[in-house]
Amino acid sequence: MKKFVLTFLLFTVHLLCLAQDEVDDALAFQYYQQGQYQEASVLFEKLFSRTKSDTYFDFYYNSLVKLKKLDEAEKTIKKLVRQNPKNFHYTLALARVYQEKGQADAATKMYMETINNVPADEFKVRELANLFYGFQAYDLAITTFLQGRKLLNSEKIFTYELLTIYRFKKDKNMLVQEYVNALAAMPELLPQAESVLSSIFEDNSDYQILQAALLKKIQKDPQAEIYTRLLIWQYLQQQEYEMALRQLIAQDKRIKDDGGILFNAANSFIANKAYATAIKAYEYLVGKGKDNIYFLPAKIEMIDARYQLALSGQFDKKAIADLAAQYESLLQEYGKTPQTVFALKKLANLQAYYIGDLDKAEKELESALAIPGIPASDIGQIKLDLGDIYILTRQPWEAFLIYEQVAKQFEAQPIGNEAHYRSAKLSFYQGNFSYAKSQADVLKASTSQLIANDALNLSLLISDNLQSAADSSALKMYADAEMLEFRNLPLKALAKLDSINIAFPVNSLTDDVLMTKSRIYIKEKDITNAVKVLTALTTQENSSIWTDDALFTLAELYEKNIRDNEQARALYQKLINDHPGSMFTTEARKRFRKLRGDIIGT
Image (cartoon, rainbow, N blue to C red; front, side):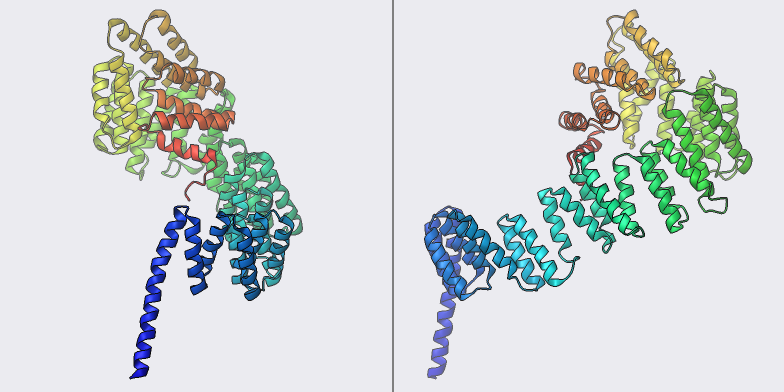
């Protein structure tokens, strides 16, 4: 009975102690958060003495430091170190006391002794490094991890931890070195390396650090393809497409690839408008022979790349004629099939807008409609292209009928909405503003944001510029200019636009004229004049319906053509702030974050 009573009393005392600890714990943290460090230190000392918890010790120690009771802290911690020499919390706390007292040499000595005495135990190494990290001693955390590698005889261990610290410190040299050293054994790190390096690198000199490290590795281990892959990425980031192609071809030959890697890279060149380099890549693939799986796809893409190249520069009649001949040769060799209908469409486009042979263009598209097995959506698109040709051949009624046919067949679908919009634009070109506006008003509710935005702009253009007889006449001249732009007659279109102010000095079309001029200049690669008119539009016409379009286009020119990232970032920021409801805001935010160095998608 006495034994039971004694056990019961001990259990009761234990419960009372636990309850008191909970009260002291809550109160101690409350005092600490309120800056009452004297009261907090008393309670934390009491809790630590009872529990030996490292957490309570840390708060007790920090309270003493806040109170500048460094001698008391030193005396207490020295005693703990003697009792527990392997407890990192105590040794590091003593070193920090020395640091607080201005005894830097003593602190450094103790830090290094602690690191040098860390056991060959992965958990212990992490524990010590994390303690250093906790009070922002990042270099000491790095030293600890490197010491751990030596002790555990492994260069792979602690890779992720070191990468995190190097990235946080923005130590580009060590970050590059760590990635390069790790990739051979951990190739799965490549996507992360590309993402992190692109976010932290600021200029070409940073990429040169990576290039030097990679070339050194490739010299020592030319068979490690992971280094070549990162080197190719580096060249792409610097837009050194020719250098990237050389590496890709060398890699293709070395690993005896079927061409898949190079084919995908060529598509990347196209996406970056490096058409000349893409053509060389496709030529190499075609040179592998007809038995290669990429022979026909590469041949098709090669011609298409030449198409993009010809249309991206100044109008070169010989280049266009040569390109048309290549499409005709392709069609003769492979016939007119669903697989080659793209060539018919591209050929018709060249004939209509660059060669000036509208009859041939019309016949090519009509023959495309007769090819069996073409998907309905492709037929719809061909009909839309044919409708455009009818406009150029002065057959507006035929154009209107075919647009309406597509609109009815694909009602409430994107291609059907596009047909409705082209019908509305045709009415606009003809000066039938009332009908064009009624069509545009219906399309403003389109599920396609692009069509809805274009329709809204057309509707506002008409309603804002029909306030007087002079406005109406000026709008007719503007519609004529847009028709000339549509017919690919840029000089005549610009002349017509300039004549509006001469004929009607007071008109409400200033912002519309500037926006149309910018489109023409951009198409003609006259970036200087494009920037000039867009800048005028964004600074002088702040209430214009085109302001958000102009801001985005101007930012894009600074980013991709002028290579002025700072100005591009400022313009994207202005668009985000001033036009939060714009259809361009989401893309502008993404580009702004990328230019700022954020990692998109993480």
